[in-house]
Length: 193
Figure (cartoon, rainbow, N blue to C red):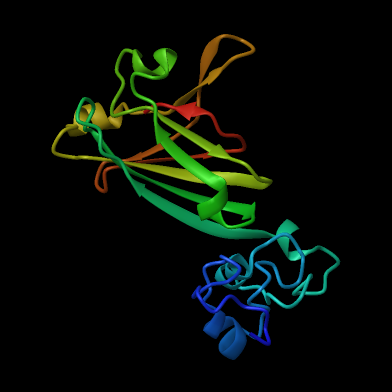
């Protein structure tokens, strides 16, 4: 109670760190989800390798919430109608915690432009990021038992350019041995394989 915690809750400030851990391990304020008021929760700071008690952990003049950190998110993809695509990995240098700021959504049937493409392999995915980032490396994983090597060698990734009304090639690299297609992008949208 001297820490202004709620004795009926394990995590008074709902930052995903228990009050006990905040007091006894991290030395953060269990009643404030962002002890140093830098825009990141205490849990996010610890996840990203920052000090939750310092506004600018590395003292470079940029607050921790605006520092970009290389992070990876892997998401399995399950789509009964288009089962070829089985997963996606996104490696990105971004502000904030990737789990809070990057979403990957199957848009098969919801996005008519991309759902009805001739030669579509797997479900089209909408990948979006709600924070500042540099280029992202995206790796699509496909089921090698459903995509033969000849078809796989022809795989590519495109994105729809709304300004020109055309699809643009993303210059992907196909690895038939590992069943992956990898490309780099500086912006996100719906990206079919």
